[in-house]
Length: 219
Ligand code: DC
Image (cartoon, rainbow, N blue to C red; front, side, top):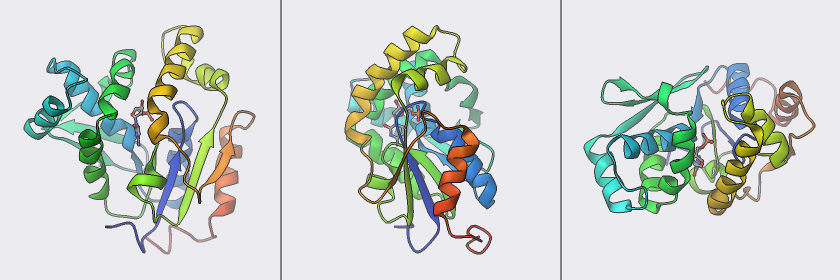
């Protein structure tokens, strides 16, 4: 395990709760890498689509990931997912990937594959996802869970996607249901409702929980 005594900050929450933007900003403030676990699931989903594998077929997906491994390159500003030498990142935030990613992420062996990739990342870092504070880095010293109403999340996502807000809200609710199992807050996480907060306010709220000088001394 690489999750102690190093600095790992986990930021979990449902889709479009703001966790990616917040995690990136916290990482920048601390000068440590930002790690997006969702991007690895998106990378797996993209491979499934590209190679025409059935998203319900766990065995076939695991075989695919072993034959065509994906890897995450985290840094402070953003993350890239590669398959071999190819950067998949530009294809990962699309409605097409949104539609299959929950089905792919539901399989325990796919989750184990992604978790292994995440645990290879050397701390310190800020990591965001659904189960970072519970399943993947349970001993992380700083854990946060962001929530927001489905309406607010749909509005936020509509700014990033060409579809209309009603369709996006429908898809988000569907994904919430499918992702619910791995989306519970850790018992020791600080829960922050971001519905009425700006990005700066959420970042400020999290920074207040972190001791001053963090990052610089742990790097
Ligand atoms: O955070 P995101 O929307 O990029 O995540 C994409 C999908 O991956 C989401 O539908 C749920 C899944 N996911 C997961 O199951 N566990 C994680 N730790 C992160 C993402």
